[in-house]
Length: 175
Image 1 (cartoon, rainbow, N blue to C red):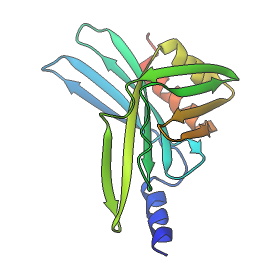
Image 2 (image 1 turned 120 degrees about the horizontal axis):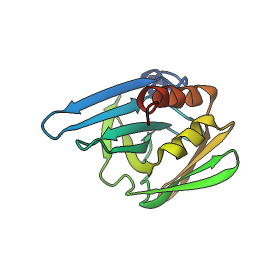
Image 3 (image 1 turned 90 degrees about the vertical axis):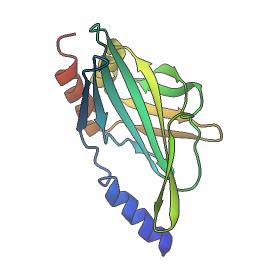
């Protein structure tokens, strides 16, 4: 019973299964950068917990622009430990594209819900604007994230494509 209530609360906290399009913009006038980050883009994934595929645009003070994919996972049982190196793999219309990063070692947190512990991990991957455009314009995108013990897989839904296209139309239209 306790696990059923916990699962229901996590589902409600995550906004059910429909991906949302949320943007947070941070402007740092002291260091001269702007960060536009997407949140809430849940992927239709197998297994426990949830998997989010978000993106961000970082504009440095010299107007150089960097894009990143952010994989965010929440789990109820134990750490996933997103690996360093090539731990994000996409099949973009059947073409394999691997992304390497530092893993989640610097981005792991825990929380409590009804006396149960849940864990969250984030990993960042550099991505080119051309790669983001290819993902956004694809007919099918499959996602695989490698952890130290297991892997998670999922697929983009129509909402995921829409969210990415909206982000690119707002933050990359002039690039």
